Length: 379
Image 1: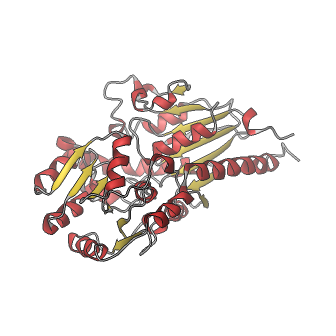
Image 2: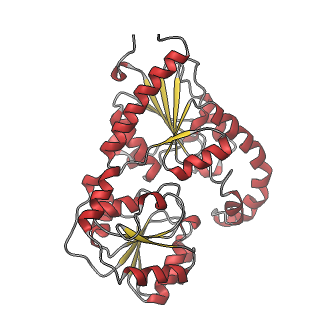
Image 3: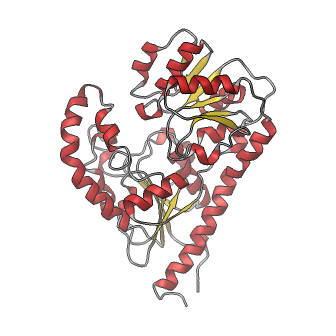
């Protein structure tokens, strides 16, 4: 007889839980969906996740190791970390992975579902970019020497780790295609969750454009800075990261850097902006959907997950090249257009966290039943 989901023992495995981003919002949505589930991760910063104050969170030796919280420094150790987690007592394991979390080892009777944000970018799709543009400061020359020496073995482990997954779920069609190419596996697509209730439409739109996100090289905020340097229009940049300092030096007085901002204030800035600027190629991208939840249009680079969520002419506009000139042309086009905030928000509602929870619950329930039948445990 098939148990109810509420009676199953479930583990949620995350690469790391040190700051709040799209992957972490997926983990939080999963913990809401499965309130009794245990959580496993390499490093956990408890102060960043008050929602998990009363949850059982198991961490690795990195949590106690000197500089262990800098998980980026230890790619050669992270595979070992996830293989050491003992998950034998669980009926279902759900990993949220863009790195090593999918590599946990489970028993034949345990169903492993991986919600994959992307096959590890610095192993596969964006390896040469990361090698040319490491963001470790004074350690950059060392990284460029050591990374090619480690990458072959790490790729082999990552490919083997992917074979341990029973069912892949991708956050976008873009990611599903990468899973097919690098892992030779099929993936169902369930878009990441957006907390639409956090956002609202305002009639008071202020005179600024907005960039939101971790300021790393591949986010390409540098394109927005150069474009708005030339346009002379107000631009606000929310977020911190290793690329921020060198970008700040290049910015003119019409560009304001707000740094790290609480979620409530981020919602305020999004609600009142002219439009969100989204110049990077993301695997999925929750921030554009958050802007749409506020009824605000998005000006996005035509690539990756944005092509699946932004409806051109209805919820935003695209630019075709990652250059300041192409973005400038899109901004000028945008300023000649009119958008309907209610229509934009209605589009965002299709991605609400409640939709994510329902789809994930249905998938877990159906997949678990099918898995037990395959194992001969359920007739």
